[in-house]
Structures are given as C-alpha cells and as structure tokens.
Length: 207
Image: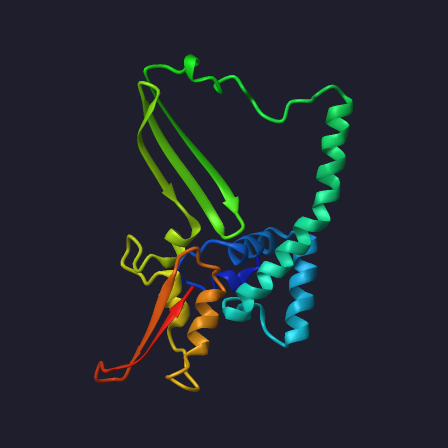
C-alpha cells in the first residue's frame, strides 16, 4: 500500500497548494484504496496516456469532476434503497427538528456547518443574539481556491495552476480561461495579459 501511493509524496506533489473540489476528493478516495475510484482513474489515465501525476492539471480537474459524478451516480441507488428501507422500518424523519423553533433558542446561540459541495469544501458559521443574526460568515470553495496566498505564503491554487502556462496567442489566452474554468469558480473574474514590461496586451472578462 505504501509503495502504491508513494507518488503522493513525490517532489511533483510536495508543496502543492491545498485546493478543494472534485480533484481533491478523487485523490483522497484513490489514496484510500477505493476500488471504483482506482479503476476509473487508471482507465482514464490509460486512455489519455498520462501518469497519475497528470491529474494535477486542467485536464485532471475536468476528468475528476466527471469521474466523481460517475461514482456518486452509482452510489445513489444504494442510498435510495437505504432510505426506503428506513421509511418502511418506521423512520420517517429526514431532519432533527429539536432546535427548529426559534422560541426554544437561548438568548445567545451559535452554530457551524460543514459539507462537501460540488465545487469543494463549504463552511458556514452563525452567531445569534436575541433571536437575530449577530454575525454570519461563509467560507466557500472559491474562497479556498481563489485565495492568492496561504498562511505560509505559498501561492493559492489558481495562481499555482497557471504557473508555467504557455500561451499560443496572448491576445486570446484560452489556456488561462480553461484552467480557471476547471475549478468551476462561483465568482466573476477577469484575465489580464501583460508583456514582460508590464504593458497590458489583452483583458478578458469571464462570466
């Protein structure tokens, strides 16, 4: 097992920014030895004639989104069967309503929720005082991926993914657009291409 996943410790992967989303989840499933993920990844890499390290790329992110969709679609039948079995067994609740009524809340309350959304890790924090929202914060997947630097000063995922890109035509930077789109950002963004002297060559708005 250690030898099979030693590529995760290779120099190519060491120091990479911690991006969130389908690629991160597929890599974790692969590293854990999830059989379906391993089969799908190997099939994809064989078709594309790429090493496993090739997943860390625009193509890899796009492929991971598709592979994860396949994994989830295949699992949904089991989840549905389990839900029906629970309902037949008398478990008809799909949520815990114990704290749903604001009249049951204390004078000050706070909560947090985490989940893996399609784009990546999503977290929400809330503080409630006198039954009113006093503070609310959300860290969404694009916050993680679009951040320019992490706490150690390393490039964020977007910037790191663009490093070393060669543009066929600087006035039509399709390579940059493809790479940013592979993260499926939930923000409007713009691409500015400059020459070595800092003169702007083109500006492209992404909607």
